[in-house]
Image (cartoon, rainbow, N blue to C red; front, top):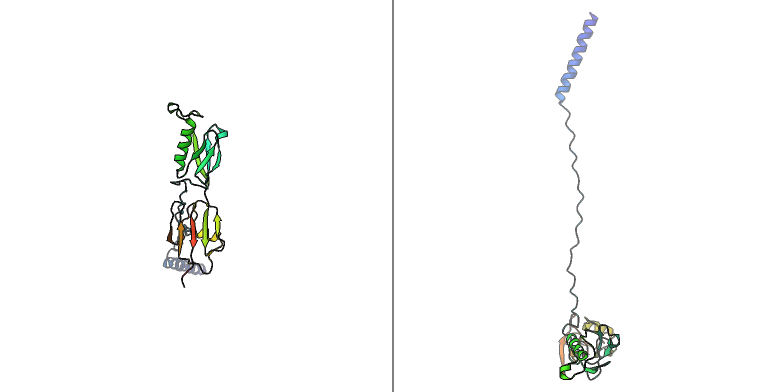
Length: 216
């Protein structure tokens, strides 16, 4: 009898446990893990590179005070750097004085080639058969600055030189200087012109810059 009661109670216990498990339902699946992507680094904004100042050789015309390097291929004795004198002339071996004033570099090359080659039909002596010449400006004539400036005088010219850089090289403005307008006189002009001063105002070889006193 006792064994029968024990069996009945055990069966009831198993039944209650089964019902509780069914009521609770199946265990939920674990939530899927979401992959976290690191934010992509922002690329810095690319700024266009500043345009370089055009070389002075483009359209530049040779004048007194310039130094020109002339290379005659396979002719080292004719190759060298020559100073353009006050008359606009360079003196070279064999061909002597050559007037180069107001010539472009390309025109200067052709003139030297012509003089070295000569013209037998015209009775002009030649020195080199089929000469090949290249030329470049080795250094430009200086510029000048005067007026309300720290150190007036003559200064070496470099390609891309601006008036603001020229003023800095000459000791900067005096306290009386007009910083808005200046005067510039070019070698090829007898008159100076008034120019509004900006950071991009360029200097040309041989220019004379005058800084005037400001009006109070």
